[in-house]
Structures are given as C-alpha cells and as structure tokens.
Length: 170
Image (cartoon, rainbow, N blue to C red; front, top):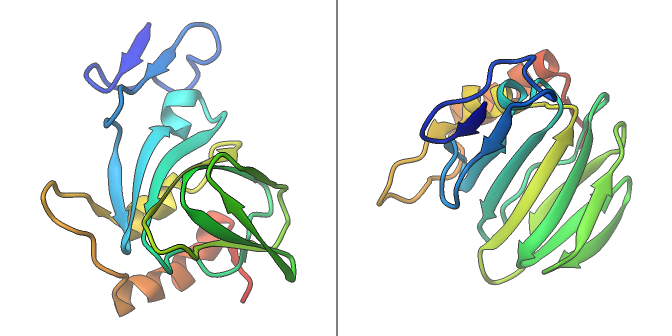
C-alpha cells in the first residue's frame, strides 16, 4: 500500500509491513501555529505511532517558550536560518545544515534569532503532539499570512499542555 497526499493515510498498525508514506513537496496537512507554519509529513496516524515529522517556517523572533517532553525525543534539522536553542539553562546557535537532538526530559526551546524567516524540520519519536498543534492552531489558508497567537490560544496552550504530556518550563 502506498500512501500519498492524494490517496489518504495508512491506518494505524500498517507500519512497518508495507505502508509507505509519500507527501510530494508542498503537500501535507498544514497549520498556522501562531505566526509559524507547520506542514506535517509524518504523523501518528500514518506511521503507526513511530514518529512525527513536520516542516516549519518560523518568522524572526518566533518559537515556543521553554518546555519539556517527558516521553518523546525531539530532533531538528535547520534548512535555512539561524535558530537559538535553549539546552537546560544554556543557549547555543544552530544554522543552515545543522542537526540538533533533544533527549526526552530535557528543558529546551528554539527561537529564530535571524533577520529572515527560518525553515526547519522537527521530529518527535515516538509520534507526539500533532493533536496539540491541531487543537490550538488553524488550518493554513493560501494567500494569507498567519497571525500571532491570540490571548485565547495562549491560554489554550497552558490548559492543554498537561493533557498532551507537555510540560511548560519557563
């Protein structure tokens, strides 16, 4: 069974015995999460829970507050831009072509510290948080720019984080 953006997604449990996931460039469920744009390439549903992979477009100054994923590892590959990462209490900068791995239980955050929009891939193993993003974000609309998070969406982050095993850690 081949899974593409045109034919739908594989049912949970088809992986790894044959369900191939294929999202051609520019396809996949796309959300505005505040002023960032997330396009999901792999989800819990189409990988049998193995991983979540998303392409992110993050404006200057954009990124989440410090947080912890108790039961999921997170990895980033910077396609373009300059991203500052928080690792516990220390920060470092990653740029185009850099890879960052954040083990589960690590307090972290990322922030675009460049002048231009940054593009990156982020991945969770096992699959994680796409429902959180869907509940708070909005479906992206062609020809429109995303808006910053509203006060209501910011409150939703605080209220929904514990339900999705996400610890906010300012």
